[in-house]
Image 1 (tube, rainbow, N blue to C red):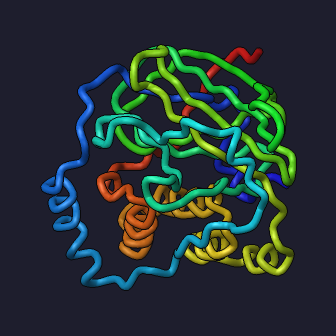
Image 2 (cartoon, helix red, strand yellow):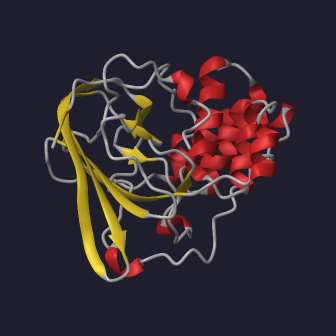
Amino acid sequence: MTSPYSYFYPATAALLASLSFVALPLAPVSAQAIADTQAEIGPIKAKTKGGKVVYTPPKNVGTPKNTVGGLSRGECRETRCLMALIPNKDAGFDHFPQTISAYPTFFFNAPKFSGQAEFRLYEVSVNASPKRIYKTSFPINTQPGIISFRMPPNAPELKVGKFYRWEFTWNNASNSKCTGLVRRVELDRTVSKQLEKAKPIEKASLYAKAGIWFEAVEALAEGRRDRPEAPELTIEWVELLKSIGLDVLVLQPISPASLSTKASSY
């Protein structure tokens, strides 16, 4: 099953397959940076009640934990650095984030960068080492903010019930890699029916409650792309990122379109 948001991604060039950043000084998010961010979103929260999009992580899915060590959504915790928008152990989550798409979309915070990128995908299982099934490299040019990448149709499609590990790198520089997990599942028919007439916040809420992380983020991001001034979409985006420990990213601008590339796969 492919994502219901596929129409946001024109089939022109193959879509961008990797991100990473030029080596930068590593520094933790400062208390002042978070305080400043909270001060900016305060007036929005005062006018708009959030909390409709609440992520419920999946449970009891037989995660092959012994094969996926060294996962990181990015070493640096500043807005100028590469960070994947995914739940992880640092925020109290220990699971494979789920998607319903054969070619899911990944969201990242990225700095201004021009260089070479690479994306790798591995299939993982309980009794074997991760097996690489896809790799692509290409030049990229990004502006600061939240960017997205949909796996291109020439990549192997994610199979329902399988577990995968992915990696994004730029120029193979130190601290320039994000690694994460993804598992494809089938969407409950009742939820699928409810999605047909749902608005962005309703869609994100349905996905989040069903434990479908990738589409929950995508629904809110696309809603904000279409209506960047809508306070209800802004506050739900803020609350969702805060719930996974990414407070520092809540005011980052979202790129109006996915990045694209003429990538070569091998």
